[in-house]
Length: 174
Image (cartoon, rainbow, N blue to C red):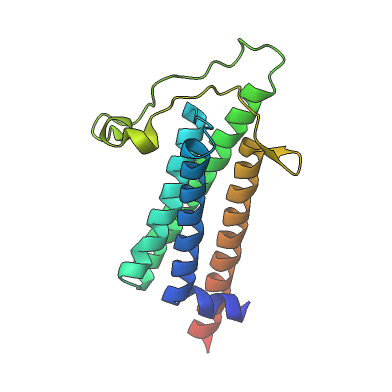
């Protein structure tokens, strides 16, 4: 646990997190443009959650301080919870017994002050169908993989937070 605490205080840890999120974003764009797997609205929201993890990692890379790490932990957690929630909704749509029970929106519901789908349509425009589940790896579809990936991110965050609380208290009491 002490190793986790010490590593989480370093910029290398945040660089590793940002590289992993950036790799996921590049992979999503590869699927979209090289493999012609068009992203649906749920895919775009999951992509946005990955970008949230990436942004969380960049905060301490720019300025590594207790408060910037706390801000990063908050953004990281929010992005993971949203990513898991949207991936679950996506799976509900894919595996619904009634195909009309869960309808997927066509246009992203981004805030009016942040219309990402208009500013960067190459990354944030939804052009696919939420029921599409043709890509699989090891018998698991993309929405399932995203749920796993966000779960792993959340598990790592939980370990980091526990280590920070534990060793922060130990350091204070020493």
